[in-house]
Image (cartoon, rainbow, N blue to C red; front, side, top):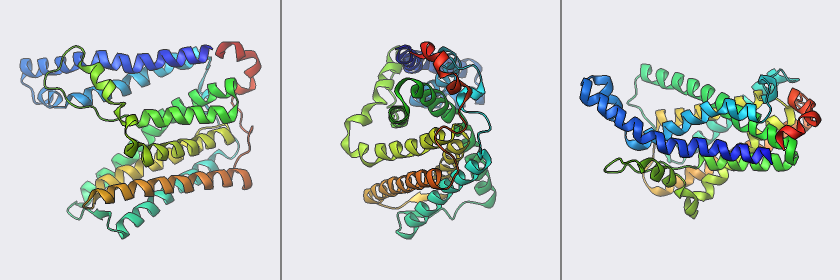
Length: 314
């Protein structure tokens, strides 16, 4: 089907392209540092090679979103879920509240058990900067990823496979992409170093201790955000939930530090999974029983014309 061909080409563009581009950018940065001697060039060259690879993956993914969307027949923002579905403002508040409450509850448990501790050496100015940075990162990440994984990918899959299967496939892809690991930095960067690093990013799938529970936490979180899109037809709830979770992760990492021992880290992983499961259960309950949205409400323009566009996607 056309959908799978387009998806495969998009993944090749992102990962194969990143492997080819990263060494060239690394050489360019070091050449500029040697040639100019400027502080900004030296700072750029000081970044480890794995960061060049990960940034190339992110940039190519964003750049490729436009042709990816057009190839799947998307004609505008409304086709991606960016429209005012019924109760959209309520979706923002409820989903954002669920995300914020789950983060605070999980952090309180970790602090109470001694798995995390406050960083008391931080000044007020630094705390405020990190909080603001978390807000900016949360909004930016949520807008980009929800547009891609829910609005574009899940929206296209719904027209081909049906809602439950589409939700399962898009959630699996979302979790797999976010489970990618940081690659190692080679002693010498060569032409093929980028592709070696890309391959190393998938190493986590072969380690059972990493799959459980972290991969299942990602699956649960993706399912919760996908459920918001599926039941409401819009991205407002999914974006609010995603943004507050990213904000929570940034604040947790910036304002607290881990306790001693590997067991504490494993315990925190299980707390994250439990938190995500609670949010998923509450999301399903709220959208089914509280009138925040019904399946089929707020259908996008793309879904309304699904019959006429079926040949475009299949």
